Length: 84
Image (cartoon, rainbow, N blue to C red; front, side, top):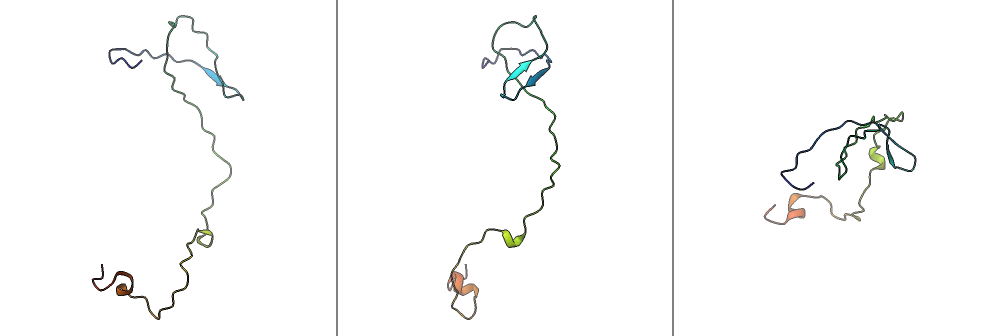
């Protein structure tokens, strides 16, 4: 199907995906030619009943920076004399 001169035909079929994750075509369309096909699945997405609550800032991951022993923290302390 990589040939750029190949024309694609669209056919709508009904199917079912079982618990074993296999796709079963329900429609019997005997007029389809034999060969490779490209499949695009459209399905109804069910919404979860469980609402997602935002994570509390108290539970956010943190980095341990150790203890800061200085009296103040100025820009020069972080970046040196050129303050960049």
